[in-house]
Length: 353
Image 1 (cartoon, rainbow, N blue to C red):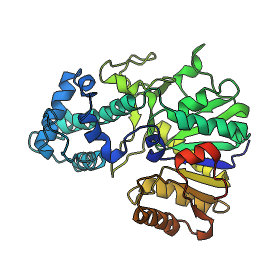
Image 2 (cartoon, helix red, strand yellow):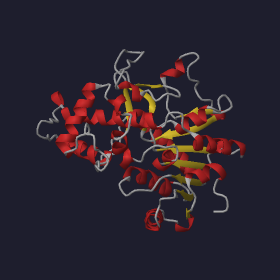
Image 3 (cartoon, rainbow, N blue to C red):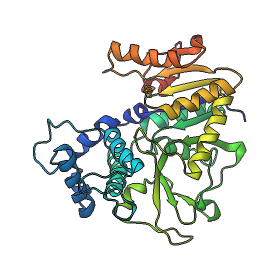
Image 4 (cartoon, helix red, strand yellow):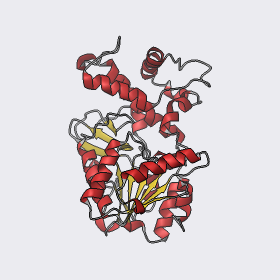
């Protein structure tokens, strides 16, 4: 069935369920009671204690973190990635391949993102479930594709609950397809597509045999730091496919390339694109490149609806956000900046907007 609608899920969609926004991730976690779980991996914990003290003068073991302004993941990972790309080191933090301490810190931070989201979103998916059920009742689900920038599995679980009437299709093959009573290969006539552009917490990748395994309903990536998992095919150590928030995003993974291509094809088919919880930041050049390819190489610009309002948003923020969307798309009259929140959209759609 042809796609008519694409629902594009940004961080604000997950925030509606309780996920901290990227800029709040570190501070919220280090100030929380969940720190005890993190300390279970003593080596990783000590590496990050030393890193934050050395690079930012922050003692994450301290008792008074309330007024500490933490750097964002984007700032930290941007510095690390630039160091690795240039082959340059910091004092006591080598970037050379044989003893890359800075690479290990990068891996620790990616695992930390997974741990934070796992802790914050256990049992959550109220609004995502409401969205999926509304689309099903309106008989629009088969004509809808989802494109997500989020690693969490909120929308995944909401869609998976509709099995066997609907089959969740990530656009890639998993080793699970070859096992009985595990994960069914999606049938095209029942498939609802979910394309996760930055990876997912329920994907485990084997860099040895280049295979991908799905862990349905479970954010297994968050557990790897405490309990490594080996590939059932070759025995190699499994790693996450997570593209972290950084200015230097690398999209070279074979499976992610497939996801991006299928996302582009779905967006080209769409008559309407709903941007939910996405502020269209200037730094997201990979996303803008994808959307510009869709707009220029497709037959026409789809109708664009921006759903990203919330109680704390100021008029100035709204104006800046609307300007970013309007200046990007060539057919300005097709860009509709709404006053709807993601929660509103899940409940009733765009209504009279």
